[in-house]
Amino acid sequence: MAAASGYDLRFDSGRICLDLVATVGGRLSEAPVERLGGVEPLRAWLLGAGLVPGGTPLDVVDHRWLIRFRAARDLLHRIVHTEVEGHAAGADLERMNALAATAPPALRAVRTPDGTLVRALAGKPDCGALLSQIARDAVQLLTDPVARGQLRRCEGETCSLLYLDTSRGRRRRWCSSEICGNRERVARHRRRVAPKPPEPKHRHTMNQFRT
Image 1 (cartoon, rainbow, N blue to C red):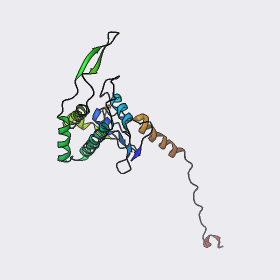
Image 2: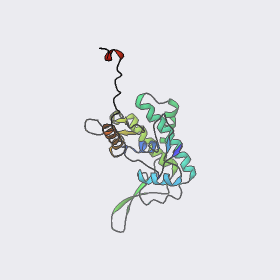
Image 3: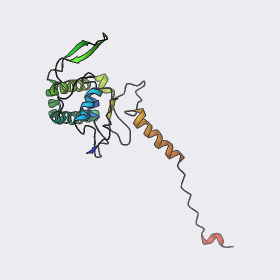
Image 4: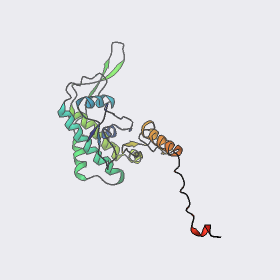
């Protein structure tokens, strides 16, 4: 599995469970790109996805967390990609339900020195509790007919990310217009301006030279 440079984390799918699924990229038929290549990318993902409030100390996040998050990611990847066109395996659904059964992390409203209320965890971040929150989001997504009907797979040539299409008319084709959409526009422009190959010269038969 190839590693992504600079993490390349994506948070534009519309759901936190899909954002976790997006930490592995590339076409399903090709070698996947790993975006959770270590503990630091996982910490960045936890903050970027809003799973923990900004400023939360994440020194507790270690390689054991990384193994569990990757395992949950791979499970949800199988489930949601299969559910787009068919039915996920019953054993996978049971594993997702088991993850969702753990109590989600408790949040507190804390006042900052300037008087603003901000979110904070009631205790140290807990791996099982955070995974439960993601699994519950997946359960809600897959059992909500409206949200499920908005689930799309990116049409980019090198992308298979899933996202919720909430655009007017449900005509969104790419996970990101700035990334995959722009790649498609650039490729289309290059095809349009590429020089056409010279037309083959016609061969004259001997009859054309007879008088």
